[in-house]
Amino acid sequence: MAVSLLSFHIIVALQTQDFTFPLREERNLFTILAAISLGLLVLLSLPSVRRLAYEIFLRAHQVLAGLFVYGTWQHLSSHSHASEIYLLVALGIFGLTLLSQSIVFLYRNGLFSGRGTPRAIVSSSVSKSEEDIVVNAVHVRVLLPRPVRVEAGQYVNLWMPSVSLFSWMQTHPFTVMSWSKDKQDTMELMVKPRGGLTADLARYAPTDERSEGSSISYLALITGPHGVSEEVGQYESILLLASGCGVAGAIPYLKKAIYGYNTCTSQIRRLHLVWQVESIDEMSAALTLLNRLLKDDIVDGGYILHISIYVREGLGHKKFLFGDHERVYLYQGLPDYQSIISLEASGNQIERLPNMWDEQGRMLVMGKVSRFRTRSTS
Image 1 (cartoon, rainbow, N blue to C red):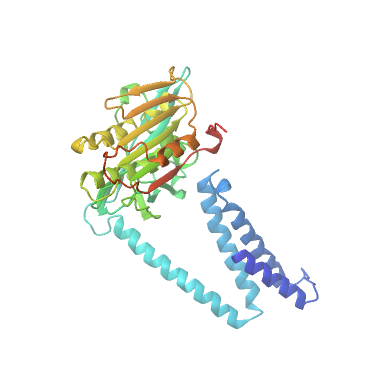
Image 2: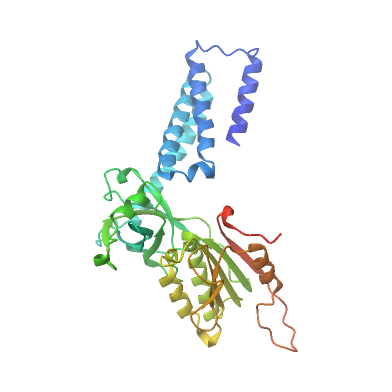
């Protein structure tokens, strides 16, 4: 919208000036600065660009926003006094918003609580390769001085200034895996090592055999929780699709749905998690958490949770039953999502009482998988 309005303004302004734009005028140079800054902001905000290096994107976004405001101010200073007032009003609103967010930030991170600041307990899930130890995932447990209510699917921005030399310049969003009907004083996060802060966490987390099960502690500050949460209680069947560390986003929804079933506060009758991993070693990052979910799913022998894990390589069998009650299956290869969704949508996976009217309820499909790692039968 901002780009469209700016483009319209530029076209109208050029038309009134007979399509002349002399660069000798200082005001026009600042106009170009503001326009280029806004254009780069739009390009950097594309998801494909943002995912490459989040920390670089964040700082570049802030710098470009500042340049855009500066260029706009200089462009207006010699043109319209009324326009300057509009910009000052916008900056004033931004300042008040920043002030209120800062107060919430300080309060949430223990200001005057007498309990210190949040601490992040960092550990890792590793596997051995022929040459080295590979970190599959980093687990971060954030201890909060003040409990916070977190809904399923929400995330926090984590700032850990003491991890490395430049980590004080970096913040990163992470999905909160833990869920509770009450406020939480501990948040569980799963980190996929990539670059920036996530690479630093993987580098310094204990990984050798002698330190198995050990952890390291850092100062950590958070903002949030942010994001929206999907209400799942009105659905009869829920299918969650995840790949790799994306399972972190599915776990809190599974916890919430199982709690709703156990307390008879939702319409849930079937949960199916389809998790796609590259190798068996990658499964170790979340097996403990999935086992907890299976243990919670025991009320009245309901067993509503079913897990299908697709291992791209290294399984040795096309299909393998894992555990009791036929709730967890391991498959060799890639999932056929079209067939899986069609089967769940049919409602045949839910046992219904014979000779009784049992209308099929609503179904929810949610998740995110790598588009280049799927299989189709078409």
